[in-house]
Length: 420
Image (cartoon, rainbow, N blue to C red):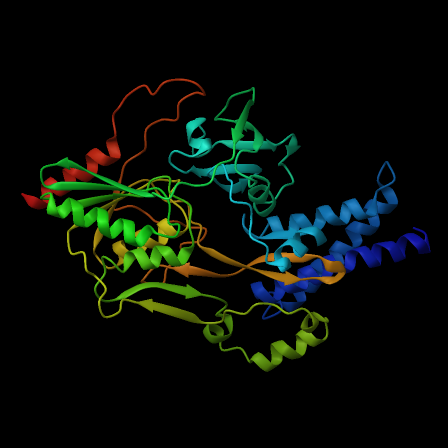
């Protein structure tokens, strides 16, 4: 390898090495297993040298390093991402995203994958469902696209169009789905009676307004004679995490609603923080401002909470995510509700921008919400009290094979059993 090439590798690999160091700081690889971390750095250097010197074709160094950085971020969790200078600038500008969207929440599994489509959104009307793979957005492949990037590509001015390439199940041929972006509807909670004494409330999003709308719907059903209520957050994945806690306050009078956890290894293992800081100084990592969330923050019910005292059943699926999971965990953990349905997704991580050299950045999960008992939601999800599979996903364009709703039926049976 020529001197010029080696210098190029050094310059381009510096952000990657710093990225690994940041990962070490956030993931406890500098202590107590620092030697292991630096062994991986040496292996990384060897791989770069071998690839550039021996690959069958001349390697474009910048492209290879960008791929390495994206791979490092992708290995953390679906919501963490390596950001290019343009993406960093967009975040730092503080500019609001366009009002129009298609109603999709995404995760990542090889390609971008649908967590859920919001009720009555363009995506829902087009038939997109939990588990669909989005393999392209406006012709751009999502194989190397982060959730951060994909979610922003879906946003735009109301009335503008976006085309998705979608694969469902084991289908061999993708479907091209053209969607017109819309401004989300203001109504996100609806209700109806499913029996003389049971009310049903559908929460399609935890956006602003969810608390007021949820409170009103339950009150209306109670006045109509409901003695218990079913709250449906199946395929609900939209809204700030804080709104899930705020909604839970309506039902929980006392106790812990949720916890917010960050790095706790120093406290758990009794490590000396000064020793860690000393080792970090040898790497240059102290030059990178990393968001800290050490320890745990507890969010508890307050005076005036728990205004709704009706017995509750909460319906969940694998498309239940984010604020909806935090809401469900708060009610379940305080014995205010049973969870009925499928294991939830497990998406409750909090991200922040960590700036890197050359105007690049890392969108990093640095903390996560926990259940009232301190169990992780992020990456694990919630196990329902009554496990019932959702109806099978239909083929594109096919009518539903049945009007059956086994999850709702199971909740109604549970209410009847408790009332007996």
